[in-house]
Image (cartoon, rainbow, N blue to C red; front, side, top):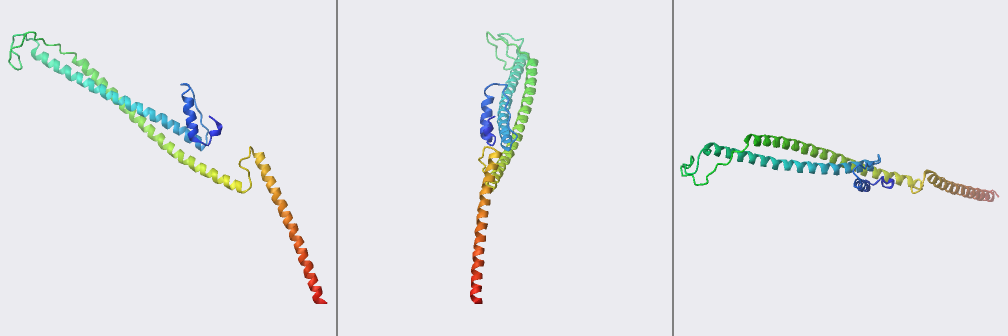
Length: 227
């Protein structure tokens, strides 16, 4: 993670997604700052959203499989009923359902393996239930991490405001917040303090001179009155 982005959660997420796309085994670590935590949760939120969407897609595909299995059971049951009713009849016999003569070429197809169809339906229903449970769990995880990401984003905004306020107060004291390091910042503070002290000393000297002039003027006035 680029250290220059440690206060920018959006740039950190962008960089993390870039790294994630380089290889399947890449691990990205975020700094333990307000922005870093927000970025971590944002990336996790994106991953959970993808997982939830995929789980929902799988669950919907299992619904189709269950529907197909039910249709197969219904078809097999219908074939078995027909076979049970007309299995022994031949062309020229009376139809057991409508009493009409069965035409030449009449043939009853096999009833099919009804038990296998029912087993496949039961398996499909179980798979659908498992997929539904997985989809609900993935959705709940996404909602939870989305809420944490939202809270972290609010915390990041509060921290950023606090940093700005602290920087403003620091700059009001004469500290150069753009300094490269603490020693440089301290040097600037000491220089500003020295300049301020020199100004105070000059003002104090000027005040003393002014008081001396006032005292001299008062002494001159008194001597004139006394004479």
